[in-house]
Image 1 (cartoon, chains in turn yellow, blue):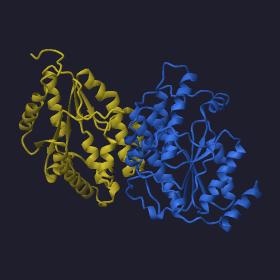
Image 2 (cartoon, chains in turn red, green):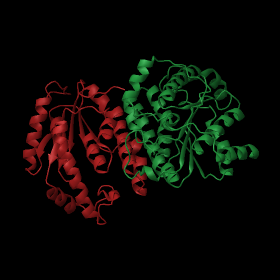
Image 3 (tube, chains in turn cyan, green):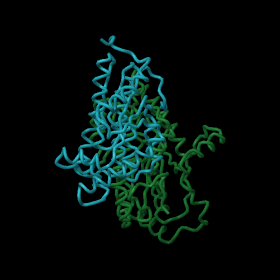
Length: 227
Length: 284
């Protein structure tokens, strides 16, 4: 098995990270639109979306039999499937690949669930290093407000209810997300994450993102010349 | 004191695990399940509660692996991780609870088969050892060893060639026989390396069922009576590597199980062991 690390493929890999409610998915959608308009071949890949593993994850979540170890491993399996069948071949072919959540999500969540940090990092060592990893930094209260306003409730694992932090899902969610936020902050220097201030207006954040992406796209292939 | 091969999982209280974990390893078609079918009643006659378990049977991922393999769509890293998920589920939901309750757990394969298969399929050996480093170190690992020439007639004349057991996913251009031979040879080579590294007790699986069983029974009786561990190297493993290379390898691995024989004084078999053995003898 190759340890890819910094890849030399013609494609580019941009990933977004941040706690729930940081607005990262919105920003990635806007980046996607712009890249397509610029004439790049763009492909999107979402965390926990491999059809191969979906049934197993669903079964574990429904029956609530997932432990920190199996939670971690099933997400790694999902990620490996997308890496092997999707992300790598696309990068080789010269596409711009966009990922909503990447290995840093696993590093944050699994470690908060009690898994050994070095074990998780080594588990994902087959992953390609992104061209840029955008981290959407947002205070916990702002993110909580965005999430709870827009939804009727949070799911069991999403709220970290498996950790027994609190009987109240909302309170559990707050504690869990708070710990994940701390984990992200520690990873900013470790993995050289590109920090975006997610409290700024949406357009401003997007302009920042596009500037950074543009600088990295110099040799990327275009499907057609931009109008 | 119990140990894992590296990391301890959240909620895994090692001091509570009072049962015994006994692993039967060996390649496809070597007779592992036959031996477990014989060992279980023998243990139960002695009043030991037994859990027998095997790879690919977990509640969580067993079905998913089966479905994915039927589609032949799995990438190599993905397959390794799917197996690791399955193993973790079995460890946490079957093996650990049984060990907490004081059972003898007989497992048909353990992490070694999974690691050997992954390595033969090109997985990085350091990576795969890390992935399984949460596994509990067993009380004994019995390896039913067989050469590829003895294995072929057993498999072909009973079940025929299986796509995965023939490694057709890695040698798709070969016919089943050539692929099986090549794949199983590589696998057996990998097992021999693991046998040295993890201190397997090697049993010659070309012997008849009863002889293999007698070896296993003596080994298990010794483990249960807490006697010093003395690997039953009834088959000397050919030393393929220079000693230097072997030493180097150990450094980057989680520490292999301590040979108890070095730390425990030689003692005659306990009365209990003799009684157990006699009972086993009488019951057959």
